[in-house]
Every structure is written in structure tokens, then in C-alpha cells.
Length: 333
Ligand code: ADP
Ligand code: MG
Image (cartoon, rainbow, N blue to C red; front, side):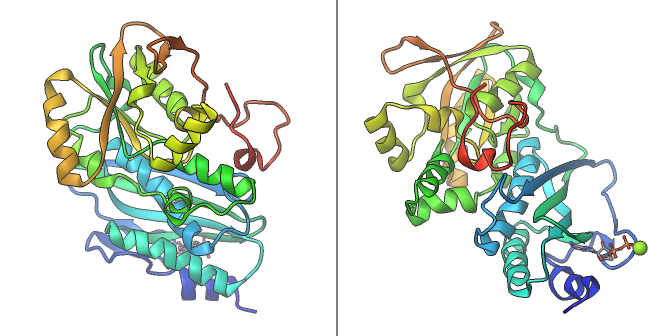
């Protein structure tokens, strides 16, 4: 049986892109990196726990991708350029084929974004993955925060909404989602290039991890504003649109989590730049509503009637909630 050190050496050392700004790589007591003069360092951390955030038997290659993707998505939402990550891995056993596949999925996404794994910690216990991602915001650039939205700003989302939640719903019903839909759940695309392009354009931004209503709600609360969104404008994939046309249930795009799209606000004077940005990045960008001076988030249905919006998932929302709640239900708040 390999030792913890052999597992680290064989599978977890030197993953991702090589970078000149790594002065001491994984293998010493600390990693050392060179932060460019004047740049801001953006730090974020996310944990994925088996049975809570993913099925314990999920393909380890996709899990390696997703664990990194959810962290890179936070950097994207801040407008940061990903640079370095650390990885705390708790493994139930020393299954080397599992670890090799996990590392391959992780490394593939890390390489795609020029990210280096520079250290971490490895322990035995129930499967859990914590990643801290470090990004850079150049000295002359503004970060994208949640608090900058102003009344009159347009609310924009990237991609389509509700796909990951539909894939999860199908898996829970013992159906096999089609490969595109399954990829939306298991291998989300962090909107890195979009986040950086938005630095001079957007007044506020957030990534959509817990569902549109919940996450847009956080942005609006931080900005001290409200908003109205229009269901007719929500960008939907054919799969989600078909599901809604049979059920008339808008939970998927409004409250479904795990899409990792960006939701951001744009002052009206910059609205004309959205179309060319979408074309340049090959990424759908859709205006779904407008920020206003109210303190509420309201929705209009297809008939223009005001409706109550279902919320997104919140951890610890109900006392005594069981592990697995994230996989089995969307808690309404
Ligand atoms: P220490 O005892 O000094 O805390 P560890 O034995 O935990 O060091 O780790 C030894 C080296 O391996 C360190 O440089 C650490 O960053 C690296 N390392 C440990 N676990 C991981 C991991 N999951 N991914 C990447 N590097 C890791
Ligand atoms: Mg040490």
C-alpha cells in the first residue's frame, strides 16, 4: 500500500501549467509565489463533500474538473486571472486509479487556464475536496464586486440557466441525461475570459452557484437595490425549455444551482458593447431585467403578471438537514 507521501508524489505534484512566478513549488513547507507589483491577490475557497455536493460514485475525472471549476468560477466573478491553487484532499482509501483520474480531470482544466497546483494537504477520512484558488487583478484594473449595482443598470446572465439542475433531476429519477446536459452538471465551464472582459464594463457581478434568485439576491442586497426580472427573457437550453413547457415549473432556471454562469449588472451606457463581447467570446449574454430602487427582487411571468420567485439553495437552511440534501432537493427560502 503506497504511503501518503507516495500518493502525493505520484499523483498530486506538479499538476497544471508551469509558471515563472512560482518560486518554490509543492514539496516544501510552503509554496512561494511572486505577486506582481501593485496587483491585488484574489483568494477564494470552496469545499465539495461526497453525498452533499456530488454523488460519491461520480466519475473521478469529472470530479477533478468540477472541484477546480467551482473555484475558478469565483475568480471569474471577481474579474481575476487565475494563477495558483492549493488542494486539501480527504480520501477514504488509497484507490490509485481513482486518484489518477481525479488528478487528470483537475490537471486538464488547470492547464487550460494556466493554473498551477502549488501545494495542499492529504488526509484519510470521508471523501471531501477543498480548493483554495488564487487569482490576480492587475494594478490598473477594477475588481468586480457584488456591491456596485445602481438603479437603472441592466441585469445580464451568461449561457443558459437550469441545465445542471435538470441533469441532477434526471439522475435522481434514474434517467441518464444526454451528454451535453450531463456535462453542464459534472463539468461546468468557469467563465474566466468573460469575467476579465467585464472589469471595465460591469458595475457588479456574482457567479451562479446556488440559483439565479438566490445569487442575484446576494448581489442586490450588497448593492442596496432591488430589481425586476422577466421570465420570458431567461436564456434556456432546448432541454430546459421543453421541461418547462410540459410542467410550467420555473424552478429550474430560477432556483436550480450549479450552473456556474456569471450574473452581472451593466450601466445602460455600456449596454451596446454586450453584443460584440458575446460574439468575441462565443458566449451567450442575455439581459434578463433591470436594477431599481426598490429593496425587493420581483419577477414577471410570460403574461406580464408579477409572480413570487422561488429561492435557491442555502446551506443549513433547515435545522437537522441531512447530508445529501444538496443532491436530492432544492430547498426553498
Ligand atoms: P507538512 O507536514 O509540512 O504539512 P505535508 O506532508 O502535508 O507537509 O505535505 C508535503 C508536501 O506535499 C507539501 O509541500 C504539500 O504542499 C504537498 N501536498 C500535500 N498534499 C497535497 C495535495 N493534495 N496536493 C498538492 N500538494 C500536496
Ligand atoms: Mg512541513
